[in-house]
Image (cartoon, rainbow, N blue to C red; front, side, top):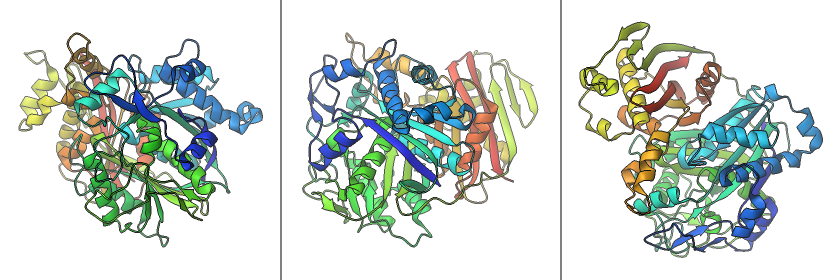
Length: 549
């Protein structure tokens, strides 16, 4: 019964109505940008103009925070003043979805400033799950409302174009200096975009519903997708298997990078969705990172309400190895259902099934039990209640634990601090378990406070103006969800993987987020919990293995 009660978007093309109309009429905000910090190649992107930024900016907020606040306020206004006055803070949750947020601030600090600016006093969670953050946030919102845990969940996805982000994607050779061409023979990279999109998810009939959702990990590589589309295929299968209706419209990620488009095409082919009409919106608004999942879901809803599947702008000649019906022109349809497919770094893949014709079945969060636990902090480790005091001779406790109790995994030394901490805890915890999961797919959930800030500082030093040498390997680790990917790769966990950012180690919220993961019947168990890393002297991890009771 999870219903989209209201939506609001802000792009360089305008609000929800103006952006939808522009896309249907073939207008794009992707263009060559002139910004002082772009080096090495022209930047083709979708960016707000200086005049638009002057209108968007709010006092005492950064550009990212102003954009998120404007969008959150906009979606709440769609519900009316009476709704704002009547919402119960104890029955409402705010989710901020972002890939990087404000580079110079803690993500939860930014979230609280946004909430304060719109007078929200409810609980808040940040979903920072690379490019699938928006779909992960919508999936969480649906489960929490379907189960009756909350009456309303406000989801806002936002990201802005910055020197930090552009330099990172440049280092990966992922950007195109021309407007992108999803699934086309001549595609050569993506265009970054900035935008915000928000929805209010509640319960009821009528309107658009999130019928089902799933996220799955490739368990392959932290920055390159599985060439068999394993995670995307598993997510598609989890959502569509056993359903008599065959989806006829798929809003894909369609970044126009060589490998991502090929991976998506193979996943769709494996899931027997060759005949579905495939549409990518990246040619109109660019890749809007943490906003993409929410933005592209909302735009597709509005387009189908107008009876149109928007053309995949830039697509002309088929450029992937399997048959796929990519629409080069607008198509008139009477469809009121679609799939939203998306993928991202860390091996993450997500799918939503959206429908105007059906409502989601009630969701009951399962009863759970914790089978094993581990805590690691400076000077101490506790596994299943057996505590030890540790005083490594070289002063690096994590390195000492790795060499003494694990070893044999050279990639460990390439990881950032958060990934090493989470990976080491997961390794020791699974050894205490003594067996692989006996059924289903295992999820990996990590909640953190400082996220990847220690790596952010290191990466920023590589893009100083007088010594510009952005490191692609370091940039990837500035995404906090990479820790979940490292764990999934090591143990071949193909289940749900998500990174949440919380203001502190909130036991009840962490327990709820892990339990919510097990609402996905494809999950047999979930590994994770709290992992926070500042430096080699300030860290803490408390992981558990949780199963259905």
